[in-house]
Image 1 (cartoon, rainbow, N blue to C red):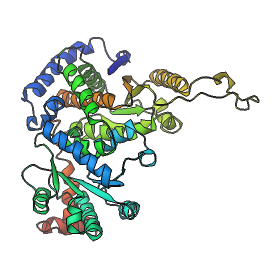
Image 2 (cartoon, rainbow, N blue to C red):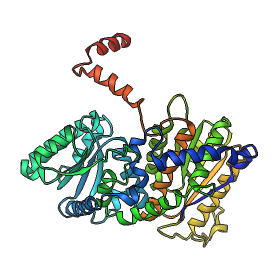
Image 3 (cartoon, rainbow, N blue to C red):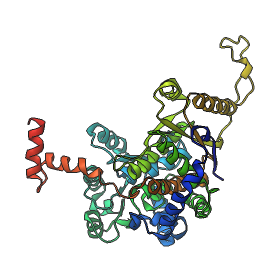
Image 4 (cartoon, one colour):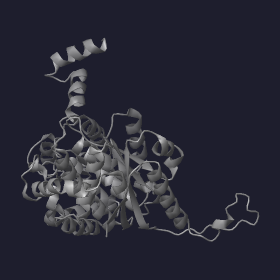
Length: 444
């Protein structure tokens, strides 16, 4: 079960801060439970672990089994929430080197999340000599990055397998009723999965958006949903003993006290993309109206030898949230060295996990002494059930936190700014006036 430890936070806040946050928490909880807050059209994720489409879930498992049987690789095409959640779960549960240690499961490559020609060429090279399938994920089908990548991989599939063969290897996760990708999938006969209308991209990992790639990696999506459902049931009970309320209250009180940055820290290399998912979740949800903690992430202990200096002695703008997994997949015992050249024989016979735990405890104390409030989130292991708990905990906390901040946690109007400028500069029809204005500013 997920556990929250705020013992290294209260000393940075005035007495009574919990009481002062309680009314806001009650209102935020009501918004989520009753759908009465801003952005309520996008709170389908709130009850998703219980109310998900069981028939589609079974189709996801069947499609994943087919991909595992006929493909050595799956190319997942999507950007933002259309790939971050899946990659976060796959790597955290297995390894950041998943493609090297995957066993009999297909390699999974992510494309369409940028515009690098070199990056896309590398994925093309990696699948050129193996049977592969594509999962294209886009609600509209017109977002530039994934749409361009899909054009390219669709052409590769049709060249290799013919139009009929390609049709059997393309899986479209898109809108249920409308959009360019939906229209193409209907026309071509691709197997389709749904991006729910009431679940925004950054909250979509427990829908087909995340579940199909996760299942292809051989990960138990039933256990993932079980963990999320159990955490949902716990967090839906209002009160100050609710860990999501406590987390949201602490970070909001710290923000009001002058903190500007929240750092998510993990001690496992495989946790890196969970940090990337978490940054999108909180960044897009709270970063509005000139408000919000800036979300950043670090990998300890590696980053203690780089960013650790700033965290310890830089400007006191930060709060640190640490995620700890109580159990390791493996055990490594430190051997004895008769010559003791490195002076570490005092560690001989000890488990590496013991050393890592003492590092975590020592880092926490050092950072707290340096003026950095520390929040600790602990789960049992890097397994499916714990990841389900962790995902739902952060999703629910984020919704509550956004309402405490006074913003709509479920829109992202600022994302459109770069898109509109890019469309204009690329010469998209209808953007002629804006194109001229931008080129003038750029000195073109």
